[in-house]
Length: 472
Image 1 (spheres, one colour):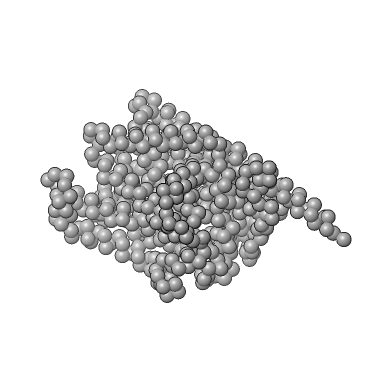
Image 2 (cartoon, one colour; image 1 turned 135 degrees about the vertical axis):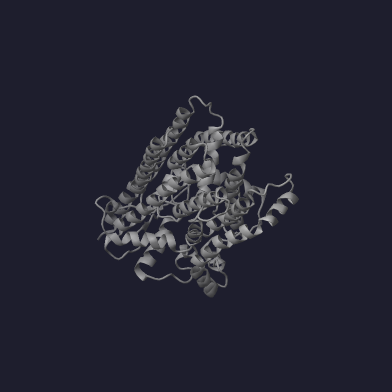
């Protein structure tokens, strides 16, 4: 496919994702996304107080403030002071059964169109997330092009898959800093790949220090990608000093020979990133005794008290897998049908085998350093969330892996692509993207709307009936 048509297809994918995530933002009842009410409370505090909260009373203030501050700026278009208007559902019951009531909140008619006041502000914050998730799809295309420049079709394939993953569209239409984390994580890995391709010379990957610093100001887990950037600098600087053999000692000799370039490039990347994030880091150190504010985190999460076990590992991996593709509601408690997860599991196994096949194919040596960076991005992000799981409960949510969503989906796309015959490959890839588009629409129309809209109407009627009954 020529460059012009590729751009048109990419623009079409970005528009389609924006429309899908926008539909989730409009039709998913307010507050019915993971931690959305708490994220809204953080936005409200920043918008009204124009200052950062101190202490655990705003629970999401354990996170850096950049996403929430920008969302607060978006809400200013509503033109009124924000408030905490969501009404808890007194009959919430997330266990399937006769009394299943999955809504965390009651949703009165005032939340419907036309939107005013706090409802309008809430919607505006959601639409800001839609823009961020759409930009993350574009950044994923960029990092896939940088990783596999000889195969531009894979970049479109990866962008198309990510655009329509139900969970990505669901979170993309909610107030949640995982959207900004997905964008800045993809830009960070893209920058690392650009540095690698440019042999660690300026101006290749010039944006990398900026997005590293901004990423740390959005979500701490994005910092798991910093070692990927350092490895890219090291490999880029070593390019041209080919080792004699593949031993560790040979690579160490190369690193010593190129130490001036990789040290200078590392400092040029890390120093500005740290300087950008330093005000927040120093504030945490002053208030809570450490740069990341872990003491505050302990006060705002359900702390794990039992030692880690193999059962916990199974729980975590299963939760990550299912909710990366799609589990909905305020606690990820509304799944898709089981057969969909089995199909996605089969596709994932096929993709993993395809990546191994591609790696072992003769002539693919030039792509291996980039693939190593992609795989390391996923591994380090997962390791960081696992480490956090030793402290906190409720970490079995695939959205926590969104800092590595771009690299992960790129590897998934590459794995499927490698099994497709060259003749008809474009059509097969388009069919896969179309299937994901159908799945993305189904997540909203076939899972969220039947579960939450019906329950919301029932509880509005129930509250009205209770109020009418007790009137004198």
